[in-house]
Structures are given as C-alpha cells and as structure tokens.
Length: 341
Image (cartoon, rainbow, N blue to C red):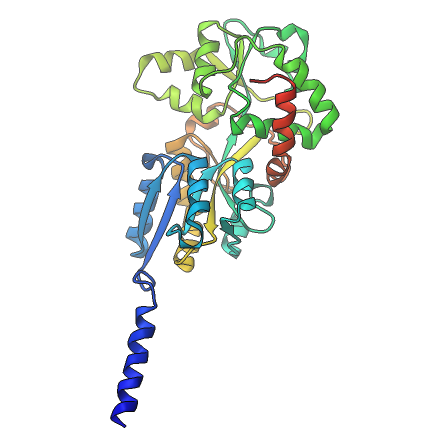
C-alpha cells in the first residue's frame, strides 16, 4: 500500500513539473510594433480592470514577425499588434498566427477590416489620401489616384519608397479595382511624375510639399495629425501649409488600411489574450485611439477626434483588406518594373 501511495505521489509531482510555470498566471504577452506610448495606456487600463498582467515587447514590425518565426512554438508571445494588411498577410503565410474566433470581435469590426478566417482583426483605420500645398494647388485640379499619372503632374509628386508596405498596399488596392494591366500602365506614368527620388517617411513627404520641393504628397493622415500637434514649431508650421484631398470619391473611395491585432500560434494564455483583443475594440478603447493617435476608429458608431472631424467625411474603399496581402507580391514586382525606387 505504501509503495502504491509513493508511486502515486511521484506521478503527481512529475505531472506538475511538466506544466509551464506561467500556465496558471493571469498574464498576456504582447509583441507590438506600435511605440509604447501609443499602446501602453490601454494595456495598463485593461490590467487594472481585469487583474490580468500584460507584458509588452515593442520592436520593428517585420523584425517581430521574424522573431515569432525563429521562436516557433516556444515563443512567449500571445498577441501580435502591428500595422498594414499586407504585412499581416505575411504573418499568416509564415504560420505564426492562429484564428481567434470571437463573436464580440466579429460584431464590433466590419468584415472588410478583418481577416475572413479570423487570423487578424483591425484596431484602427488609416487613410492614405492626397495632401496638397495650399498656396500652389487648387483642389479642383485633383480627382483620383489614377489621374496622378497625367503629364501635368510631372515632377510635382512626393511619396516614399517602394519598399514601404503602405505604398505596396496602395498599389495592391489599385490592382484589386483596376486589374494588372491598367495598374502597370498607371505605375509607369505615375513614377515618371515624382519630383525627387523617394526617401524618408510620410512626414518627410509632407514637409517636402510644405517647403516647395513638390506640390502634392501621398501620406497617411495620422502623420499629419501628429505634425499638427507636435511640440516642434517647424512640424506644426509645415502641417499648416498642406490640406487633405480625398481621392476617388465618385468611384471606389480613398485607400485605407489598418493597424490590427492577432493571436499568435504559440499563445499559451489564449483566453486572456482574446479578452484583451475584445477590450481593444470596446467603445472606450476605440475613442482613446482616435483622440491620442489621430487614427479613425474601426468600430462603427465611435466618434472620431476633433482633428479628424475637421478633415471632413470621406468614402473609403470597402474591399476586404486581405486582398492587399494576396496582391502584395505582384505589387512589388510591378513597382520594380516601373522603376519605383
């Protein structure tokens, strides 16, 4: 009898030893390409409300996906927060994500802003319109992205390089609406209209338009919002010299993308992670994003910030953003063929 009891105790000890030390903890481990200041206040509020601790690691978007790949099933990450549907598609193909089925997420996020199979869910909407120098451009001259291939825009356009995922997704969205042949023809003429070789980020393109290096820039709206409220007077001054034009309002609408959240394949705290995902699309969280980050709420019915409202309403392209990822490889090849550096 004593031997049986001892044997049973040994089995219990061995089984307990095989359970990871963190398995019983209320914790979520997050890899985020968003800067800490743009995400941590929400994570801290979630922890305060639920008692679930959130460990945050920030880094460059592509580097975090590579890290998930190299760590494999041993990765401590439960969630990935990053931007752009094209990049998220790469994460799906890399096998580092898993579907997060949630009726709360499905109800909160329009179908066009989430992966059809639940691999990722949009958190914010980012519009990428035309920004023009107010002292040199009459907005009546502007209409669509396609029209920017016209010869009248020769040496007047600023935009960042072709290795930028935002531009790759812009081209991918055009492929979805115009097809490959028309997109290739547009690219050839569009690239010929660049004022300077692409360099720098979106803020640099806005600055270039403000100082006269070009007449229009293509950039994400939240960069303009950040510049408008920057401590640096030069940034604020540059932002005051440009205005937003919403292209393609008579057809498919302005190109938009998302920042998004996804459940990792290695997630060890799945239930807590899904709770955090659901918290991120609550009305309060969505309103905070709009006020703090100058991005549009992905959830319908949540009011945008005063800065965003001042830019006016716009019609957004409503294609499912998963197409941007699927079209990404072809978009890159076509941009290379057109000589977009």
